[in-house]
Length: 349
Ligand SMILES: *Cc1c(COP(=O)(O)O)cnc(C)c1O
View 1 (cartoon, protein in one colour):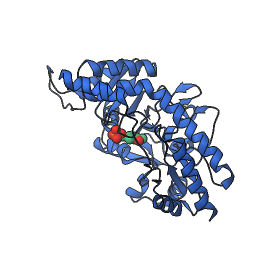
View 2 (cartoon, helix red, strand yellow; view 1 turned 30 degrees about the vertical axis):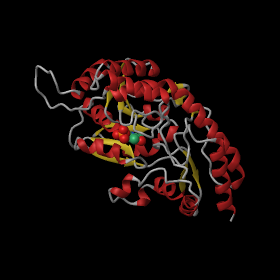
View 3 (cartoon, rainbow, N blue to C red; view 1 turned 135 degrees about the horizontal axis):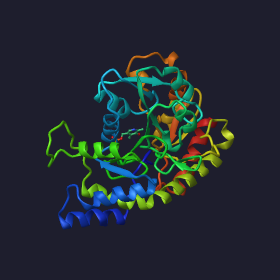
C-alpha cells in the first residue's frame, strides 16, 4: 500500500531521541527551550512557546485574547474539527464562513459578511501548504490567529505565514510538515501575550493560583523537533518536486490541479485535485490498486453543525469534488509515476 501521508524519520531523529532516553531527563527541559529558540529564529519572531499539540496551542491563543462566552470567532467551514474544538473550549460562538475554490482558504468576502460587533478574532488556517490572502484579511482590523498547522515555511508576498497575525500556532502531529509525534508551538511578537501563554502552559511552581493547563512539550518531542526543523527546507523542496511531477503527469486530463500564484510559495502539505462527478470513484479505484487517496478533510464543519450546504456553496462543492493524492518526502519517483499512471487509467476509462 502506498500511504496517503507519512512522517520522515531518519537516523538523526532516532539518535536525538535515544540520547534523551539514555541521559534520562525526559520532561520539559533544555531541549524544549532550544527548540523554542530555534523556532523563533526560523519565524523571525520574538517569542515561542512549545506545547503538546496544535490544539492546545490554539486553545492558549484564544485564552490569551481573553475570549469570553458568547464572543464570536470566525473560522472557515473547510478545516478539521480541532479548530472548532478550541472555540468551543471557551464557550465562544464559532461563525463558520466559506472558502475560495482556488486555494481552499478562508474567503475574505465571506469573512466580511460575518463580522459583527461581537467578533473578537478570526482564525485563519493556511490550508494544505498555501497561504490565505493576508492583505485582504488584515484590512478588517480584527485580531488574527494564524493557524499554520499545515504550512510552516509557506510564504505570502515573501513573508512566512505565521508572521502576519497577532498570534500564530503550529502543529507537529505525526504526519504534518514536520513532526514531534504530537506537539505544537505558539508564536507571537507580543510580550504580554507570550508571558500569559507561558504561564498557563505549566501548572507547577506558581505563587498564585489560577486555572492553568498541562500543555507542556517534553524533551523527547523537542529533540525530534530540533532535527525536523533543520530538514524542513529540504522537506518542502522535495514536496515541491513531487508536485511538479504530478503537475506534468496530469496536465492534459482536464481536471483542476493546484493553483499557482506568484505571491505565494506553496509547500504542498497536500496535493489536491478536483474532479467533478468522479472524485469518489477515483478514491475507491486508487484504493483498489493499493494507493491511499483521500478527501482532504473528513467532513466540513457546517455539516457537523447541521448548517445548510447552500450557505457554504464553495465548501460543499470542494468537498464533493476534491481528492488528495499521496505526497511526502519519502515517496519515491517510482511511486509517483505509478500513481500518475493509475490516475490516468481511471480517468480515461
Ligand atoms: C492538525 C491541525 C490542528 C491541530 O493540531 P494537533 O496537533 O493535531 O492538535 C489545528 N489546525 C489545523 C488546520 C490542523 O491541520
